[in-house]
Image 1 (spheres, helix red, strand yellow):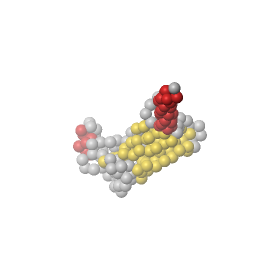
Image 2 (tube, one colour; image 1 turned 90 degrees about the vertical axis):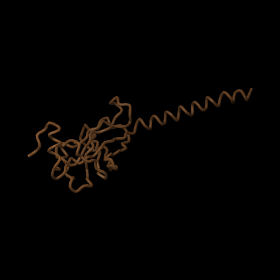
Image 3 (spheres, one colour; image 1 turned 180 degrees about the vertical axis):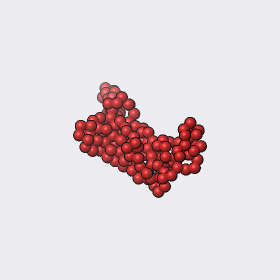
Image 4 (tube, one colour; image 1 turned 60 degrees about the vertical axis):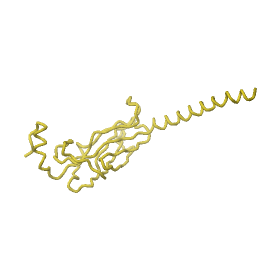
Length: 166
């Protein structure tokens, strides 16, 4: 009889242990966020990605969250881009009472390091209240502008149906 009780308790113990492990894993992912995006060099100075834009390796970005109540900074973190211009930032906890945005901070390219801050921030929702199930949040590309547009920009702008800058 003792052997029968042990046989029935072991699977129950394993199920409880797995349920607790799953709950702990679920809570961890539920409270941490990963913000991902790309940084580019705006080679045409048009403030959006074109076919001649270049994604920057080694650029630094800064994520800042500010309180909607008083504007105070509640969280900030920096990150660097990889060879494809991609950054990934870890943000612990919910920031449902904050406005969070990622801005370009430093460029590795001396010819492409002009920041247009007012227009060049990627706002991002860092909360579970948004209805988004994934802990990963993706931003729009952000970038730096080249000091002077490259020569191929006239053709690129014509292809887009835009008048080239004079």
